[in-house]
Length: 326
Figure 1 (tube, rainbow, N blue to C red):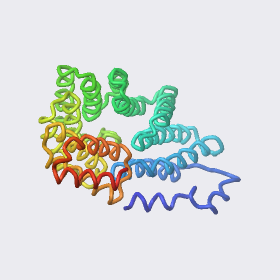
Figure 2 (figure 1 turned 90 degrees about the horizontal axis):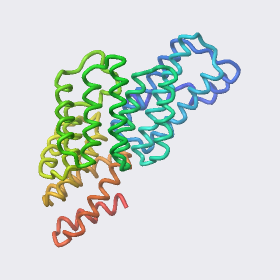
Figure 3 (figure 1 turned 180 degrees about the horizontal axis):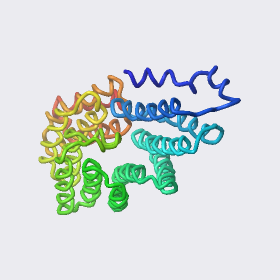
Figure 4 (figure 1 turned 45 degrees about the vertical axis):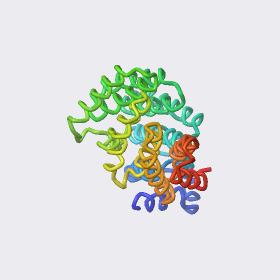
């Protein structure tokens, strides 16, 4: 994978380069471009493989950027870009920790990224970080906080005239908060708003961090909302559709979608679909995915199947999951 190859040739991973930069760190356009590419590559690797093994690498890169900021020689414009890269890496690192189920660390990095955005007046960074914080808040049982984060994100988005794809992302984040509260009416309103914005199409103003929000992902996020509302049959239809739409570059999201599908199918008493979806999700893990979030969701599937052990396929699925995610 090109992104992984590029990460392996970064100068701060080379001991001889590290010694050479210990006396003088001159930072120009070439170094800035490399740092930008690194941040983008890390996000791309996360989308395909997950954050479990990635957060350590991201932490090292962020440490290097802070070192350059503190000790480098650069112009004022380059300095502003360095701070922007540090903010992007910080919110990405928060996301990687979130995917690795290191929730306390994730909140620390998200808070640091948000502080960076506020100090520097970087409204796109604030918008992205608040979206990340809203998603995490749902998962850790803070649904009202998630709604507040999404609303605050919308205020920051308005300050830089964010494109429709950003509007769609914040709307579906808000929908997830309402769904976790069991508020069907506000969930449906927010989901419809997300789809209206999404259907306006992509634009050349879309930030890279909205690239994951394709049709498959928005269908999946709506399916997750329906599952949280207890609308299991509807959730199964949506999640099944999403799993068939997702491409290989977003394999981590497909693995999570399949795990969510398996869990929703248990609630819908569709045990065959549960077994098939769980096994597909597990296959992606065996091919290199490293998302603890997905593993935890599959553990919930396994636990929810124990009441159906009279079914031979259910027993096989429980045994398979236990062997690989215990």
